[in-house]
Length: 56
Image (cartoon, rainbow, N blue to C red):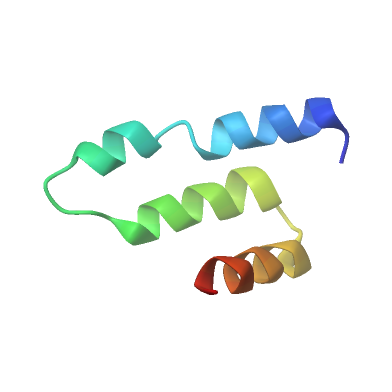
């Protein structure tokens, strides 16, 4: 992934976080799905590695 592609994807993936984090109840599924869809797309291996790293 090029630096430009990384910036484009991460901007989309984390765009809704400020609003979601201010909601009365945290919707973890919405946060995860946005990142998975926008940042990882069809890269299941990358998503699984990201999830494992976050769990540690």
